[in-house]
Image 1: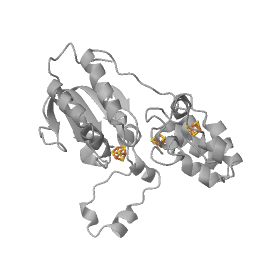
Image 2: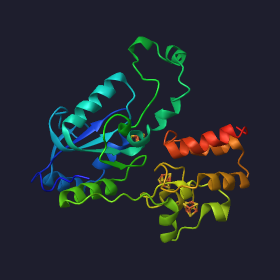
Image 3: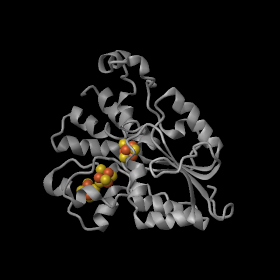
Image 4: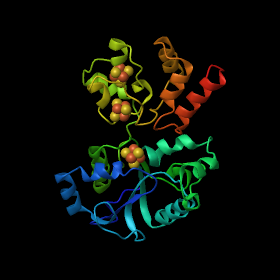
Length: 267
Ligand code: SF4
Ligand code: SF4
Ligand code: SF4
């Protein structure tokens, strides 16, 4: 992929928000002192949550949080792509459609009239889709939310003129390297770590609880084997489908795993 070091002394950076909860932008803000250092090395020209506002300006790097959920979003993301040398999607909303993707395939316009007192003010698309479904994305950072250190590593790589490292290995690898007891083996708790992308440092198992897949599918994820393991732990097919249909429900690997269980007639 392209980098920015050769093209800009103090690269111009924007952070954009689409349909999301702002949690991934907060990961940026929570960098604290590192954010101040970063701000001295890049020119943060648009970051509504932090202050600067210039959404239509040309930038070297655009970070994009959130999914495409409205007709206006579809046009806005094209504009951002046209104004950005590099575009980086951050977080589960931007990479898979996010938790709001649970409506995909089951959307009923009657819900809008039942829920909102002024349904005419709602302009949602029937599907929530990732940024890469609409424009070219140069790099994706998965997670709900992404981790601040991961974001910093991406920016540092780009500043050094090297492509950011994509770690698509499984959470289990981080869990075992850190010596955490396996919650699935020791407590029989259904854990998504064997099929989930690394990057969080096995945060949930470090606290004695299961991974619920917030970093999305790892490469070579053996979802069949894990679904069988979950069944062996006593989960019925509905519960197994629910494990795959969570924050990253529309990630193709997780969606295919859930649909396979449904089609098998047990859900
Ligand atoms: S990925 Fe999660 S934390 Fe990030 S914006 Fe979406 S819902 Fe919020
Ligand atoms: S606790 Fe989860 S992530 Fe850790 S080794 Fe066991 S299955 Fe893998
Ligand atoms: S362990 Fe799983 S659910 Fe927990 S933060 Fe990491 S990827 Fe997300």
